[in-house]
Each structure stands twice: as structure tokens, then as C-alpha cells.
Image (cartoon, rainbow over all chains, first blue to last red; front, side, top):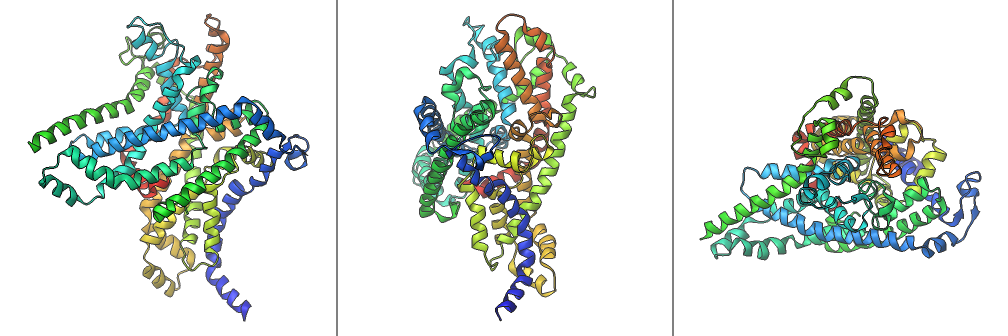
Length: 306
Length: 298
């Protein structure tokens, strides 16, 4: 009897499982097969012996990692930059979305298209754009802004103090068009009746924005911030690696967990340390994403990842 | 009084948005102008919006024929086309299966997909897996397969579209008429979901076109497989390397002769963004819709 049911379900659902197979196979190869390799963080990697044949190192990779200044620097940079990105992007994206929603200009479409465009450009080309402005010899800033002012050109790619601002600016430049779409879509969904009623009562535009739009936008802002906080342990590799041109003089302000893991693995050959930093990121990142999602789910089930 | 306040707001809003829009596109204009600037002028006066002398020679150099730029461009086109098609096949079939409410084990399958968004092995194990187990290093597959081929986010996006936009009655009717599951997918679900497929195809296509990491990580010797992004990346690295090692003396000229002139590099970067700029006006709406559908999860 049981086999009969199984045969029947197989006949009905077999083709569906078959259709799911290629996609699942890819996830298996790309996301699940690498997981056992995480043990590398507890091993002294030896190329000849392979991942699983290498000698155990216990926690020594982690002890060594956290004994260096690097662990502190990469954690600090990853978190501080993300916090700055979240704050600045929320403020600017919400402001832009509110202005766009209130504007009745023929240029509205142009504004929207222009601010979204940077989102579609690769990190390599962004690094070209930044280089055109900041190159020491030919850069626009040194040649066309500072020189006419009689100010000595700045060697941008070796001066640390400017980079937090440059990176925050480039990130905002790239990201605001995207975030603003989500806020704008939410605002456009609001009931126009509130605004009409407020206008009849003599509310100014500013009052309408602060008393209606922003309070009603709050849930979306909270969701966006929570989701970003969930990813606070991850950084945009292209931004931190390409835009500063991998300049060694800038590492203390541009090195994040992602760039550290990359350099350890492929530039310095320090695979065990790289694996330890990678596992540190995976585990803390997992806890943060999970917590953020549980919180989001409590507030609004639709917005959560699971 | 109300209209005066409104008018003031409109003026203020337009000024702010114009400033934002210009900030967004001015760097690209600088890039474009530099690519059209005479190379000697560029080196003498630096990058400028109003060059003394214009020149098309950078583009002539690129399009005159057999050089690495055209080759890399071909690789990028091949990669983007293959990647997008394969990705759409994997994404839609898996999404279709997950959209079947009664499918036994659906919860487990969905969990397996969602979990990949929460936990990630990271670069080291992924690299080891692809190089040691699959030998993807220095092959075209190294560009195509790691990380980009399919992602859980797109699968869930398409799945929820199937659930909300493909009426169950139609599927049931087709089932009654003896349509196979694959026919129902191909002839009913897909045509009804064209908007989301266009959007996901767009996301994936742009990701492939812009990707430089796979080539950077997996192509160590086969520079002939470089995409346009990898080529651009390599060129700017060489320049950094030369300017750092040669110091301020003029000794860099020997090395510099081996890499393209500044204006040629800028022209290559322009050619690298060009496909995106060309399709942008046509796909913008579909792109925006995708971002809205993904909502805060994106």
C-alpha cells in the first residue's frame, strides 16, 4: 500500500523534483560543498597534504590572528564603515526620496535615472573614475582645483586621513539611487487622503513631511537599517580593494575582513590565518544576520528573509 | 500663501536634485572627455572637462583590430550571454518547484535555499573547492560558475512571482487536459512571468558584465580569458605598480610604453560601460521594479 502511494507521488512530483535538481545541484556545489573546508581555520595548511590531511593546529590560528593588531583593525574598519554607510545612506536616501515624491518637475525622471546609474557600474570602472579625480600627476583635483588655488597637489593614494571620507562618499554615490527607490515606492503607496486633509487644515509642506511622511516611512527605515545591521560584518570587496587601488600605505584605513581574507589567501599565501579570519566572519556574520532577521520577522513577516 | 511655499519647495527641490544628479554623472563625463582628449594634452594638463585638444585616436587604436581590448570584449559578451541564459534556466526551474504548494519536502528545499543567504563559507573554502576539487582555475568556467550562476535571492523573487501571478485554476485546467509538468512550466508559468524573468535576467546580466572578482581570483595564467573588467583592472594595477616602483623620476617611461596611453585606457573604460549606458533607458523601469519587489531584502 505504501509503495503504491510512493509510486503515485513520484509520478506526480517526480518531474518537479527533476526540475529543481539543477538549481539545487548548483547550490550544493557553490554553497554546501565548501563548508567542510572551514576546518582549515583549525589546521596548519600544507599544500601537499590537502585540507583534510593537514595537521591540526587547534585554536592557534585564532590566537595568532587576535594577537596581531590586524584583527582589531579589520573588525573596526568593517564595522565603523558600515555604521557610517548606514547612517549617511539612510539620511540621504530618505531625503532624496521625499524630495522626489513631492516634486512635480519634468526633470524628475532624469534625476531618478542619473542617481541610479552609479549602481550599475563595476568596481573596476569606479576605481578609474576615482583615479581620474585623485591621480597625483594628472588628477582633476590636483590639476584643476588645487593648482589654480595655489595649493600643493596631494598624494591621495598614500595619505590615509582622506580615505574614510572618500570611501563614505563613493559608497553613498553608488548606493543612494538604489535605496531611494525602495523609500520612494513606499511613499508613493501612502494614502493621499492624509496629505489632502493636512493641507486643508493649513499644514505647511514641511509639517506634512515631518508629521506624515517620516512617521509613516519609519517601519521601512527600521527594516532597511536592520537588514544592513545584519550584514555589518561583511564589506563591499570592490569598494575597499579596487577604489584605494590596493595601496599598501592605506591599509590601516581600508583593510576590512573581506580584503584581509583575500590578501591572506592570494597575495601573502597565509592561508591558515585567512581561513581563521574567514570563519570568524562567517560565524559572527551568521549570528548577526539571524538575529536581524528574527527581529525583522517580529516586526513584519513579509520583509524577513525567512 | 500655500502656493508660495509650494513654489519655494519646488525650486529648492530642483536645486538639490540637480546637484545630486550632476554628482552622479559628472565622473562619467570626465571619463568620456578624457577618452576624447589628445594624450599629450592629457599628460600635460591632467584630466579636464574642457581639454585644449580633442582627439579620436584612442578609439581608433581600440577599434583598429587585433588587440587585447577587442578580445576581452568578446569574452565579456560570451560570458554575459552564457551566464544569463544558464542562470535563468537554473533560477526559474528551481523557483517553479518551490512554488508548488503541495510538493512533499518543499519546506526542506526552501530552507536549503534560504540557508545559503544566511551562512556563507567565505572565500577560502570556496576557492579551495573550485580549484582543488573542480579544477576551475584558468578555465572559462572559472569566470562563469563561482557565485554568479544562481543566487537564492533571485530564486525567491521568481518563486513568489509564480505563486502570486500564475493562477492556480489555469494550471489545474492544463493538468486536466493532460499537460505534463514541464509543459505547464514552459507554456504557462514562464509566459505569464515575463516581467520578473526580464528583471532577473537583467540583474544577472549586469552582474556578469561587471564582474571582475572571478577572473581576478581564478585566472592566474590565462590572461587570454580576461573579460574587459579584468583587462581594465590589470592595466590600472600595472600603472600603480610602475608609479610606485619608479618613484618620481622619468624612468617609468620604459615600462609605460608597454601599457596603453592614458586616453586609450579611458576609452577602454568608456567602451566597458557603454553596453550598460545603451540598454539603461530601455531597462530602467524593469530594473526599478525588481528593486521594489525585492524590497528591503536586497
